[in-house]
Image (tube, rainbow, N blue to C red; front, side, top):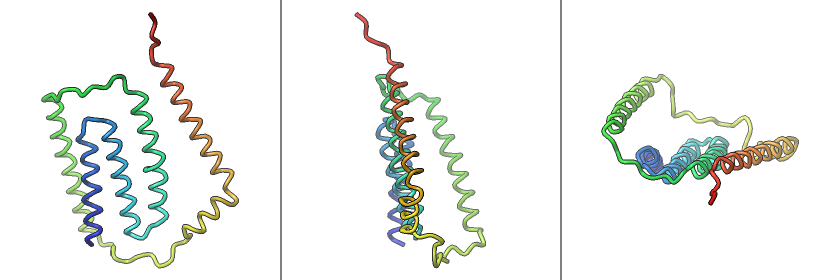
Length: 168
């Protein structure tokens, strides 16, 4: 239980910090930490495949896409001053988040499900899934990788062509 509390505390701190910080790059890096914490939850619960998928998809791919999007679209980003209107919206957001969180906690505590039972045998182990992906489905996996690389290169070309050229 101590490990779960530490994982929860670190994940929650990373998520809140990503939400509060005004520097986008720091927020993206903290979001990666929150996603890694969610993967740690999955490992703690015994769902190895879901944890590995979380690391590959969110911590690896999605975080890189978000980081590239932030780096390619920033136009001399400066930290804007905090205005009263934005503070009011932030307080409203925290109130709504607290209400939704309270509803979720109430639903979990009132749930008739027995959360202490664990799956005895998974339908497919991680090792078997790896053999399937690298065996008969290796071509599909490579095609998806090439497609994502081409999409990223296309986004970089589009972002680079939008910048005005320096003319003397």
